[in-house]
Length: 126
Image (cartoon, rainbow, N blue to C red; front, top):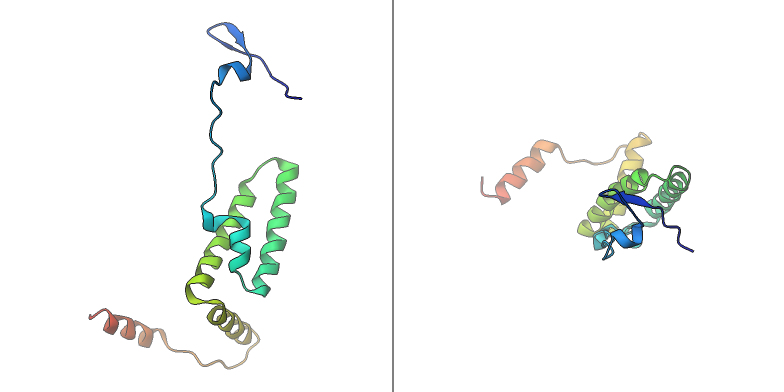
């Protein structure tokens, strides 16, 4: 059952249904920003973290009726998913593994930034 709340236009009470002759379109997320697309692009470790963050944001939205945190979670994880798709899951997982080893204090071979910059400049003909 739909509850229509009356309001006034030019002093005359009007129901919400009568005021809107055509329904407004529902905004859609870009195809790569849906929860399903994000989840599908992530590696297993990050998929679990995404699901946890997304479920927590949905629970908060259910209490506050505010979707801001849900949209923030989708936006943040969308970037991670984009990077993963761009470089491939194997390369992304190698990066995560190297970062974990660095954080654990292990020696991990790295390339100094100045070398990377000179290689990029060489490829760009600078």
